[in-house]
Image 1 (cartoon, rainbow, N blue to C red):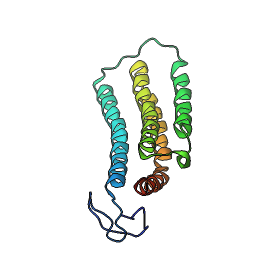
Image 2 (image 1 turned 180 degrees about the vertical axis):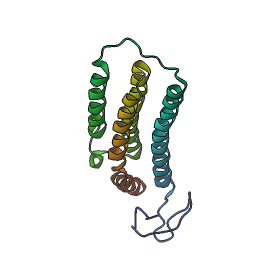
Image 3 (image 1 turned 90 degrees about the horizontal axis):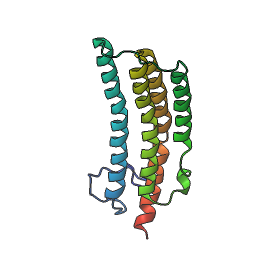
Length: 168
């Protein structure tokens, strides 16, 4: 891991300080590790939804409800708009002032992206068409790629805030 303060690669365990500059790494490492674990959990939930859809599809337990034919298309537009909202919600990372706010902002973005897959499961249950679910799942996974690509910037911002917090 690279020390946020001295920017040197160091081998530290959770709760230890940087051996070069004495920076306490625990708060930064804990926040970063939490974000990685929660990112995986949000993604894993989409896999769980896929398992549910597969189980219901192969057992023939879903019947088509009487819904307007335009509803899946409308919800797909809402899903794409949801991805745009997930990308733009909150202030830019450079303007965020503390680590909990960075973490909350990223979790809100992940929840919005995961909501697209959940919306796909609902559309699947209404239409009994696995194709609709796969479409929504693909949109959701694209959203995870877009939001996940922000992780290096997020880690850098967390490091900056951790250093600023300890120098106060």
